[in-house]
Length: 75
Image (cartoon, rainbow, N blue to C red):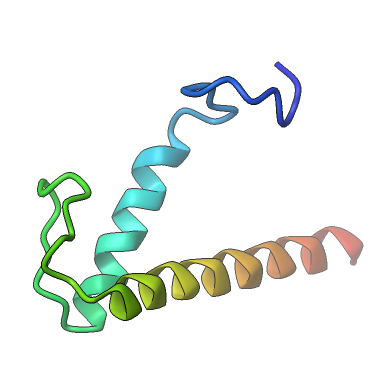
């Protein structure tokens, strides 16, 4: 499968979904948001700003992780 094939449900790394979901709830807990794993993405009681902040923190962590991995391969 090519990157960006656009078919819904296609996953390059199937285990990534669980890892990202775990990260989302870990960050939400760190921020003190009243959500728990198993609520399966219903965050209707969470302010949009807070939900967006969780996504922003996820991106920051993923970028930092990628930078660390790249730094290791360059050495």
